[in-house]
Image 1 (cartoon, rainbow, N blue to C red):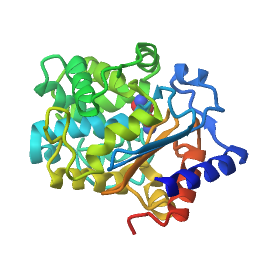
Image 2: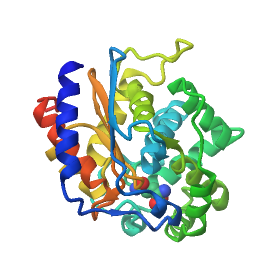
Image 3: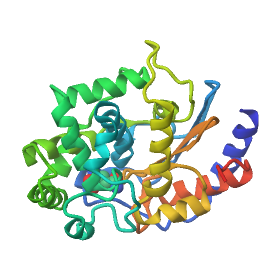
Length: 305
Ligand code: GLN
């Protein structure tokens, strides 16, 4: 940890000084109020050590990072049948694109673009009695963190301006790949996206994808080893939409971004690291987050390649 600590502190002060060419997301009106200067980093290792700098303890809207958690629960409940509803191929398109859905007959390319995550919500809807409560309880259990919650204001703000996602869901339903009521599925999706966590909490909750031997407080495994490997593989190939190749090229770790400015990256068998900096590049990924992680895996020589 000492080694990581010094490197994180050095890179943090370097990247803090860099001129940020990104922009805070404002298509979800509530997100536009976030202070652009927030900048936090936290690492958690499989030997249960942790270290953070900057605003690592401040909760923010995790947005699409939550798609890993909804995918995890759906995979656990549905098993391999899940892949009949959603594919595992990079889309090479923006996260909110409608383009490929028509030729793919309503089967989204992967679970990390909006269309795929909405289908995953629909799958969960059939398994859970009380979807919003049950999903939140699942997140609390795997993180052993009872403070987790949705941000109602962010969920309602996205709902009021969610024209793209409304269009996507209706379009997929026209092909029969949404089984439940469109408004109900979207309400669930918007709430999942509004989950709030700090860098520290994020780097802790994803230890189940980092550590092959991870069990919850009650001694339960979250996923089988094969399932965890597969989710890491989808993160590597699809976690950054049409910038997934760039992230693998520059950082070299499975990862996932969100339009709240967070990024998580996983080094299997070593650590989970999270960066939060709200200004996004033109692909919707945190500008400084990517820069920080590129420097981090370079200096620690710890990419998976
Ligand atoms: N809730 C956001 C949306 O559906 C999530 C997008 C993201 O973080 N890339 O547009």
